[in-house]
Image (cartoon, rainbow, N blue to C red; front, side):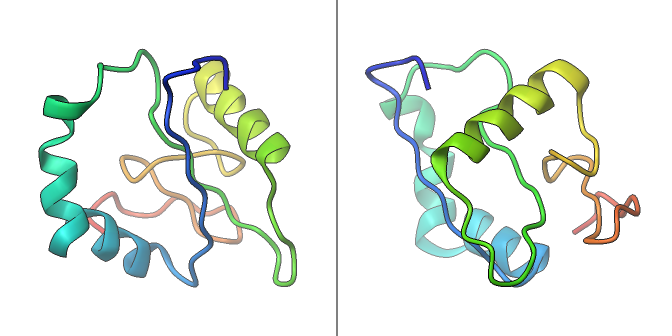
Length: 97
């Protein structure tokens, strides 16, 4: 992704709520709150979310393209964040996930 010191990961989830719970609660949530102690601040979005069709296995090329789309166009059904989520049919969802 252009930064030799960057740390990237990718996973698939069945729902935004399950992912949100994992990211912000429990052990991962505690570590996330301490990220400023371990990582340099990033410019632009630090992550991107999108819906993948069942059976599709996203790859790093797609992830990078989606992140670039988010950086260039903001949140859309193609690439979004928890701040302005979209449903699998492209409908805007409440940010109160």
